[in-house]
Length: 96
Picture 1: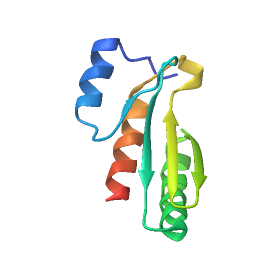
Picture 2: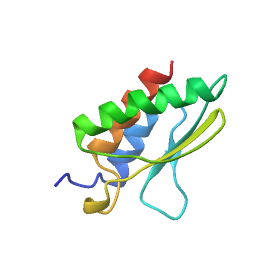
Picture 3: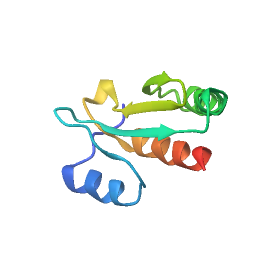
């Protein structure tokens, strides 16, 4: 099981993650991605699904047309871990 990040470690990690913020009321991070259209948004989700499956770490997400809202938290650790940071980095890289 991955260890929860300390508040300081999470803050430092978020400093290097463009667009990611802490989710209010939860030990989680989130970001909203906006694409040109549904096809681009769905393609992003498909590519991330392959990465997430390899990591055995899966996002909470919601897709409406061209918008994908993502929340990351490691549930069995009770909060944000390096798994969440690594998946967030992958998402940012794939979205560009």
